Length: 423
Ligand SMILES: O=C(O)CCC(=O)C(=O)O
Image (cartoon, rainbow, N blue to C red; front, side, top):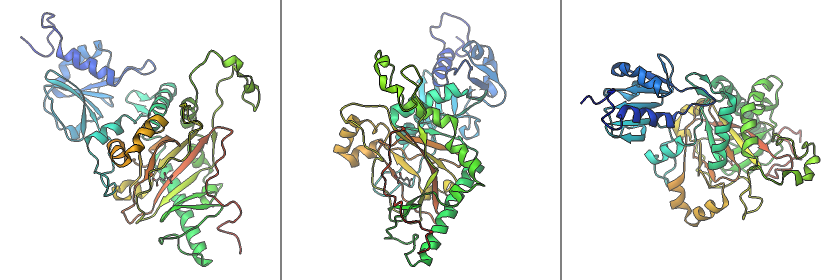
């Protein structure tokens, strides 16, 4: 009996067909676009079956490769592999499906292995949890149509409370924005030293100004600072702030399921909301800000940035934050990034979780390590924490909040005094 590629129909289920069907579930057509499949070496003979299973068989960029011999996975050109004749664990890859002598593998995103001592280093389970949060903008056949992309990302954000968007902005823009933030931090630091108010780069500083608020030792939040408000940087800031995909993902995540009683929501005629028949209005995009984590800053306490409106009813989010990563520190695992507990934006899930927080959090966290230009959006109700910065580099995250028109953020900014005031 010929095993693979046989067209006899008396062998029961064809393993190749099973494999291709499993692959199709993992990279389904999106917005009418067939996934692109590349045949490596010995798999060249399966072009007809792959096309019949719904793939575009291509030579270049692809969504999935089909291999039919033992292969060095580090040389494969994409993140999903359909393997005939190869099963078992592959380091750095998740087995997304396993059949008889065949498997589909999905490449795991990098996770921060440094973390902080009380937490275990990243393992395969954490990498798998992380992989579920990733929605890629680009597919081999081109950029994903905005509709399919935002829809998928909004679904992940609603369900998990956080979505990872690799390559959302150009790395150069992300680096420049993070550099703007680091330059502003240094300006503030020097200004405060000059005024004899202490050194932000040293521990045990308490600072609260119009442009700067300490989160805790060696971690602070900046907004309205010179480079982050400069005319010169307005275009790159708008690529984040006015980013249509981000705004639409937040709008959709914040939209309640359709109801039969919409017509009765008569107050929607107020506040420029357009009345009951209008689509939900976009959330307000706040000014660009930045979290700076300095070398030596410790792991942040697990926290949520905003409360639920009612804890007995799960409502769609009203406050989302988009974090953009960039700069030298994003190449430096020891600089840390941000950890999240997916699903903890749901009050019921979070209640169970915080009963035994150390154990449950360790079992549920993700600490993705994102590259320059990668972004993530999170629901401000989710449990999260900044990782320690154990490197020698200053780390900047540039962020933009997206909030309902009625939301007011009473965080610990002092609007009266500026770092740059004369006194
Ligand atoms: O430092 C970070 O990565 C995140 C900081 C943060 O989440 C916060 O200050 O609320």
